[in-house]
Length: 283
Image 1 (spheres, rainbow, N blue to C red):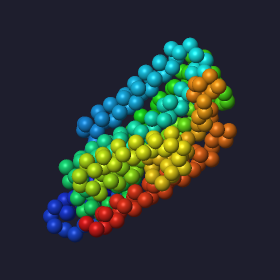
Image 2 (image 1 turned 120 degrees about the horizontal axis):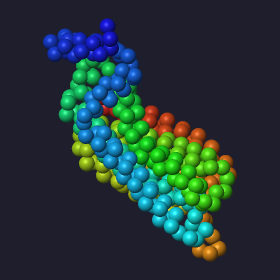
Image 3 (image 1 turned 90 degrees about the horizontal axis):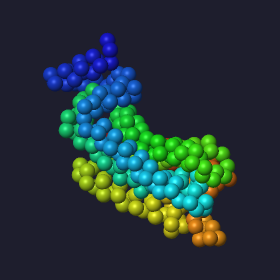
């Protein structure tokens, strides 16, 4: 018997008043498949596409403006990449709040949460399935421009100090881990708080605070909340050149920052999953 048939039979048992059996048919892969099937034809994917296009378009306009400059001090791969990287802290919480809110609305609107509980599906696995879907979308919003911008800058003759591969991989990986952490906590808020406006408001506030830590010379505080991870783990060093222009370089050894951001993502994802599980057990 297939996993889908098993789920259908258990759903029928629940409808007829039979006690639910606790089982996990197929585990996370089946839940992920069901999550994608549930979203088929919904506005979720239009929102996701719009977010990706929005961030990529802004990144393209910012790069075009920098490429038009004739000043060699502003035509560096580090500055072009750093400009895109700085948007992660501001936009990731807002985009994650919007997307996870949509997931939560679809979940409650179709009473899927009641169906999964009746089938004995584990709350943590359901949370992880949603995190994979939403997190991958939000991550793509930033990884795509963080990949093509340094390649385009190098092709345009921008000054490159160091390895091009590091300029692509390091910011993209840190952006990926920090974005997944942000998505995890926003998803937990969306699934546990009935008023979605609260999660959206917290996302905006978190984005503003996370972005402001760098200019306030307090990036270390970013480890205290997911939206600040990108600032705390920033692989870029900013300074002012003698002629007054801003300059930016990649730190000498950025890989410890990558590993630390990965650890932060694991911790915040675990906290978020625990919040959802505790809320679920209280129902």
